[in-house]
Image (cartoon, rainbow, N blue to C red; front, side, top):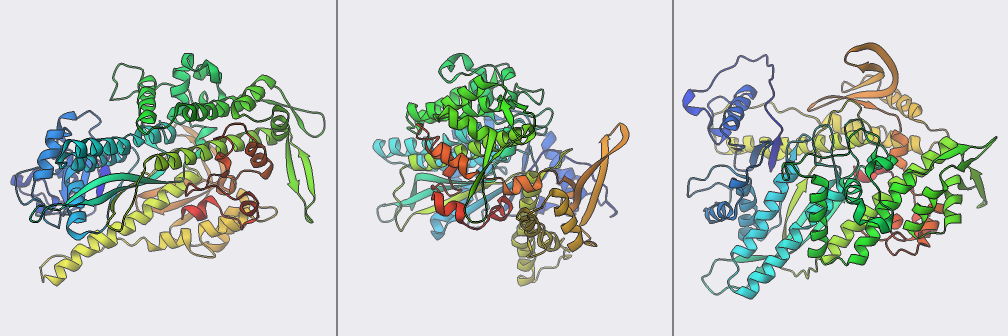
Length: 617
């Protein structure tokens, strides 16, 4: 497990601070400290951080990584990887030879050695707050595991095959980052989705007496909860997904898909930021450089240029869709005020323009008895309908890309195939405005904290008991009540949200009313009816929300659009329209399921309601 932290926080504690002896300043393992209070831990991490040591061990199973916010290429070279790979590691993950400092390579090397010794699958959890460097840590571990294959290859042919597989596995990252990462207030390259990567290994036949070996044969990626709301709206100072800015930055090369500069697209010109600073390319236009990496990654994964062009056409189609505006007609209904944008978007998606315009201006409602009614959409409804299409089209496109990456890595698994899983989890988030996405993300971290308490801290104390060691037992915080508040049926937050979604007159306000009717006195939950407009403004504004006291702090959630985000799904008439697309990719993306398969149309739209929250939990 790797726990990452953005920096040193000053904390207040009621306990009397007991400093450790000066001789223990900056020890590489926190278990070496005489006193292990919170202040002691933070002091030691800070002492090491100032010396340039960003990694610190905490028992054999946990590594703390502090984001240095600067490049440290010298500690991630192949020579460094070779030293950590050569170190003798026992099955507890501790180095027994050499004098190597704590490193993210120690964790991945221990997982690999356990895989070989026990022939059992291994997993590494990378968790921490937003901006703490989780994604970079996960990439370094993947790179090390790919290196184990090439460095142990004994003949040139085997080496070339291993190198090709390793490069394919690693080059999935630029693609996923381009389509799934974005700039937030806390992080220039924040993962706006969850990712679990299984790196697959097969046994290699060796002669008697030789050390057992494994070779990397590929990887499988599972993703979840893409923050699709970001496609149509970003907070001030943030950006949409990187791919939009890559294409607009290189718009001169993409005249065939009607690309233009970012200032001319509504979906990427709302937050006041369309550039990106990046440590990897100081002084250069980062979006253009990242786009070169993306194209190279598509090539490495052998994805044909025609498919890449269709993917980019879908992204461009979403951008032009965002430029479609409406005017309210007298009475009911609206008219398209920007027909050129609608025509361009329809052309890029390969759908009939007339049918596309009808879908933008109306909704097909199914009445009891099976009869259908075409309902004209007023201007606000048409804008909402347009944005809903944009969100779901991009979400489906992202799922198609993940499925295509998995399909491109030809993996023939056998009974001897084992894997090392790397879970790159969302970081705990507290923004000025926290919505449904932050609620799901923070709940995931709540579950991980419970896992950490049970399987690391509690397990360590149980070991002390077995070995009859003298120690002061630690009273671990129990957050089960918070988890039950969110998940338990029928009165958890997710079940109440789901039941409100299917109510005939369900609204965000009805949801919070139902919530506080069920949990009027819950110690972790408090209703929020107003908030300050800004820190300097004494004025308050009305809001419909609640506060949850999480393990990492209290978070205020604004419930506006909670129901929409929980139940947001493609309308049947939208699906029907895009199934007729001339583009092979555009015809599939609205039917892509979370597991990468295609939804059976009739069965899919007749199945029981399955919300985003239910699937995620």
